[in-house]
Length: 446
Image (cartoon, rainbow, N blue to C red; front, side, top):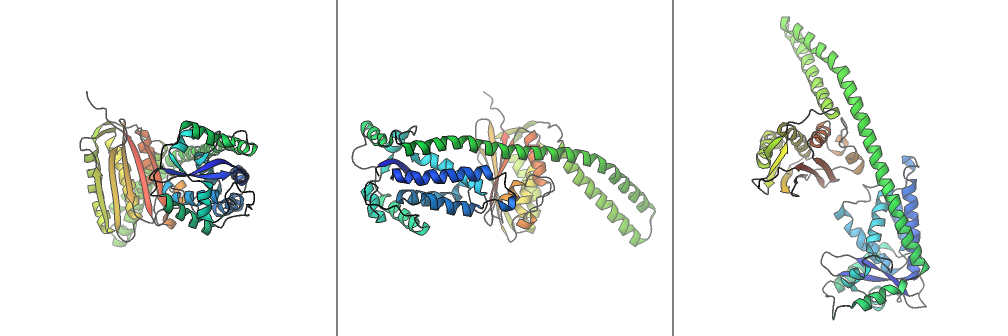
């Protein structure tokens, strides 16, 4: 059971740790990869109520692959970093978690077939089989007497992870640097091994499946959005005419009416007709936004104007608005009215997400030479994945998750897109939401 590969436990401060993986452990990893591919394949063929949960997938993946201590430690180390990368079991489908896991395995596994494998090992602290034995109390991978357990308990793997990170965190690469010849010799241990080859081939094949899954999901989302636009445009035209008639007739009756109670009722009809008209107007903008009249606009001036218009709403809810613009001279080329309207809708949602006081922090930075990045962060109640996936749909309300979305985000999405920008979102339940808006920067004069 010779070591034929390594798993990198990545740390914020280098060097990373390279854990030795014996041949038999590759069998468990291969089974886990096969199971993950099956999970991804079945995602769209199963009814939603019958789909595998991310928790069930995780438990099965552990059972299949965590028989070896190095693999178990790697699994435990990876899971601690998932929330930092926006991956949470409760918020993601089993297929999406499986895709992320496959990507991380591909990035962490070093074998004779790994491109840049030598460079990765030279930058890592290689943990020996004997050192791993000391931490785990299990026989080293090279021993013939080792018995592979059916699975290492998660709590045990976490304890091992903490111990190995603690013991090696303060250690530098140590001694002289590993020579290229030594690294090549180490990598050659798994060269030609059939089990290593099978796992590598599966990971290569999984790239295509992962790409198909992402492309299919994106195509479904785009098709749904296009259908909504067509429906919104047609329905808006048909509903606007009767609304105009209702408002006009109610206003005419109100003009000649002297009874206070009837005046109140007619005024309510007029107000509600105008409210419905405004909603239809927002829907029409989502369907076919007006062509932007773009000009050079100061980012600081634009955001300060938006803040002034939102101050009263924020004060009513006890929310503190904070603005930070990195450069006072930064300008963008947009339709000012459209982008202000978009940002007001986004800030309104952020404020409404906070029930009992909190903060909305807006920051503008120069993300590239051609783009400005505006981020809106709130520490409100946040959204789950299902709510977030529909956040840009017109009239979808996430109030059950503490967030009234309505037309605000759908209008913002369309207007920002029409101005050559983009908008994306990250959110966690009970932890808040971050909306990122990219807008085209004005070119600097020579």
